[in-house]
Amino acid sequence: MAETVIGKTLIVEGEISGGEPIMVLGTVKGKVSLENRVSVAEGGRVDANITAGVVEVSGVMNGNIQVSDRLEIKTGGRMYGDISAPRILISDGALYKGNIDMDHSGAATVEAE
Image (cartoon, rainbow, N blue to C red; front, top):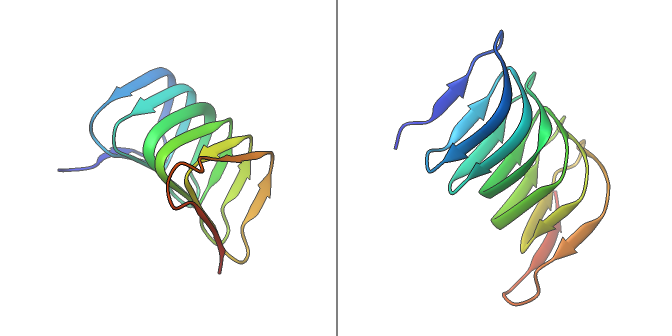
């Protein structure tokens, strides 16, 4: 499935929902509800609450995240908000401030690189 890209110069305000994965190179403000993956690329910014299968943060994320699979905060990524996820990966060089609630119904793990 092709990924929808929100370009570097774009600002999207409102609600994004659907089944396709998206990559944010620009700015998203509002609410994001996707069945698939949300990637906040380096230089990208999201000021929104996100519900998705997978979230990857390499840029800046301000808001709460609820994922059904995993959250990855990559090197250089900055995340400010609460997390609800069964699996979380926070890489060396990433920044996180908030609370974490892990779903212990499965094999939940916390890893650090």
